[in-house]
Image 1: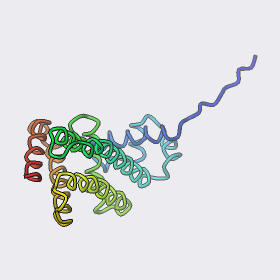
Image 2: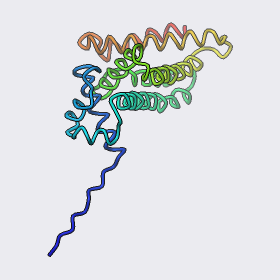
Image 3: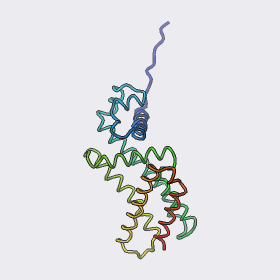
Image 4: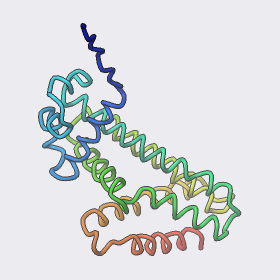
Length: 207
């Protein structure tokens, strides 16, 4: 009796995400420069040819991974925005919602730490790797837009546009600084320390 072998159906999107996760793990441990097709294939437990089936080369792979990280971070922040906008102005509920949203950008757990580490590595590499420039610009615009929405919510309605822009950039710069410190000095820049810094910053905005 002949047994007919049924080909295994591979979910292309799921396989791409497996490869992305392999890239992120490599960046978190060894840095962006080690994320070659061969290294990524080994990390993902795939043949190089299998990775090439989904990505033509390392540049396409890295650009796709960068875009995926930007989408994940921006989606996480956007999902927290309705709680901020729906809370009463200057209320404890609003303040906690703002802190929760900002905390979604900080490397306070393993998954977010890996994403933030990759995000910073990609943005830094974009200075000298033109193929990453578009995603680097998008990463700034996506997060800056959310910081702008926060600034507009926290400040009085009659604040001039220039003030909103400056406060949005201050929020973004504070987050970037906290991300770097939390990655480099996790023993010192704990979740509580990050919250304390954000609390003080919010006091300065709403004073």
